[in-house]
Image 1 (tube, rainbow, N blue to C red):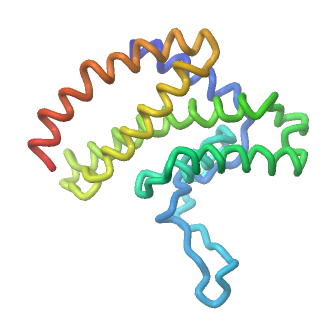
Image 2 (image 1 turned 120 degrees about the vertical axis):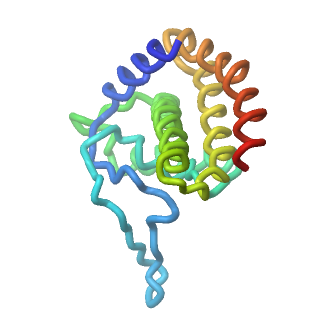
Length: 188
């Protein structure tokens, strides 16, 4: 189930338009200029690479440290799509995105990949480095992952649905109960 999901995510992500991505674009890496509150500074950009155009948006709207209502996140994703349309970014030769629905799909696919990665990083920081402060953020990240998996299981392409549904079922039936009984009781 894991190998099948991983292969499907990689294929979907590689099909997305490629741009420069910050790779750590979230609230803790954004700073407002005190003298001019209309200016925003971005820090911690040493890991910037060429990657999928949806990466930084999902990092920001599904920030591991800030919980937004799902309706607000959906609205921001749609707003971003509209801004891309107005800027004609979606018509550029190397930036073809068919529709707002495809854009939302791309954001949710990237969200699954990113949230799986973040969960692994948070556990590694605890297990290897003894940094337990990230454990408190795991429920938020897990919630985002579950939302994205469910969205893809309902709204993704038929090929994606057939891959996501078994993985989602495995998370709900095996991972969450184990997490809730062992991990939460032992570490939080």
